[in-house]
Image 1 (tube, rainbow, N blue to C red):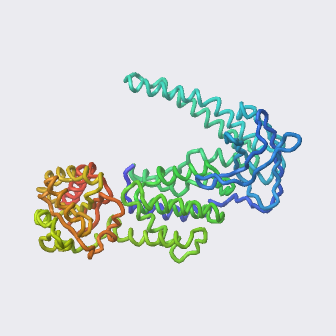
Image 2: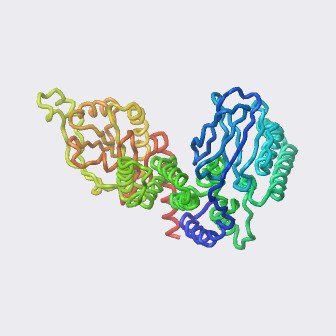
Image 3: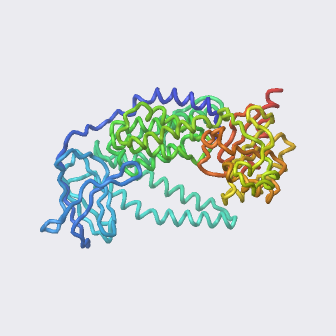
Length: 508
């Protein structure tokens, strides 16, 4: 789906405001509830089990339960214990069984054969768990059939044979699974967590939108993004589960269009959902911070900066150590000035006389073992496109990248592209920089250095790793950054093509 990022972001923000009032319609109160859960585990030889739960994508232990004289494991809580989905972990193999603690069914018994489970798992006193395992066992039975059909489909496609028959079978089986889910939801007790679990797997239903095909697609996208979590009906008990974590990954990474502003809005929606659960909120916040400090998609480090600005700076984040908070803020301050779309920081360097440096490398005075060839200031350098290429002579990835960058420069120098190549070592290593330039015959681009780091370029451009590449336009706005040398030709072609198309559109 092709979307106008700004248009999509604004429209989705409006739809989110409209829909947010319905999200918490069926909130379940979590007052103190006294639970008593009895577990009888056939063919388990251990003397203890562990009760645990998910917070985001990590497992946290709630209690260790010792076996009693009757060979059973009994859990009783003395302090507040949240209703939700839990794991019964059996050391030392750490096999796990999922189960539900529902505040409307505080006393229940579970029987399971650890060899055949989930088949044969039964519950007394818990309709919620009974329904959960009914679905679990159904899917365990039907999944092999679905897997077989999918493998047959792949095989037919590879052989370029007709796939209509097998696709029809797969569609029919998926419809059968969907009907089973809907039937279980329909017959579920009002406050069953399994009901929420099953609802989380359903596709969202769309109103009948009017407009052109592009307008309808945009409205459908925004409706899905804004209402994605409504199917949970505000059941916060489900938030501490692996399923909610997976659902959130899918929402942020797949449902949401991957421009930084749209993703940030989706991240904020997730944090708003879980904010009343302190541990859950803290886990998701740090999870998103870690994810976007070094994102897999170019430009998404803007999300990291926005998160730090709005959720860390001047906020009480007691779960972070002072030094950790300081490091996060420092990194955000470095990143904010080199975001895609920002004007690249100005740096005053020196053009490098690599030949003179090699002649002077044995000078007794270490400060005279390099030669410079005049000043270079980025913001005074004129070119339709400027590629900044930072490298080190003792960096293996850099030495592999240099020949590729040279090929790139030779192909694009007549298309308005200039490469500014910077060895980021200090004066002591200038001879090594010069030697690598000569060895690679990388003479045709602009070679620069800053022997005494007076420009502070390494901090300004966050050069903690090398090689590092930035592509700037004629105004020195950052178009692309943090790409590999093997990608730059393809990306540069796209940028030039986009610029030409924009220019043509403006003429028309």
